[in-house]
Image (cartoon, rainbow, N blue to C red; front, side):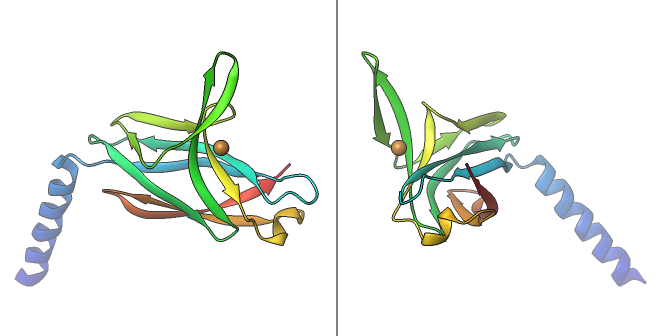
Length: 142
Ligand SMILES: [Cu+2]
């Protein structure tokens, strides 16, 4: 009986510790991959990374089972868009990082044939400095 009580107090202690320690809280929202036309092997992916925690986290890498992925940013210089490769991206506490057209995006290349099949999905694996590896299954759609 006292063992169970002890375990409960220990669990409560851990719970309180995890609540009070400042930490990032990462959530991946609405990611999807644009289905490219007929023979194309490259495309873009969009979605939102939310950090509802009390500490910043850094996105170090994104990978996928459907092809090669890079983190890009489109920059407008004198009306011309050019893409900048991002080696890492910081997500501040209580903020979100939005991947969308003409801004940050995931850039895919060397994609598998199934990119052209209807209703296909792919796995995106995000690697964060503090939150570790988070994988999501995302739709591929036109
Ligand atoms: Cu790009």
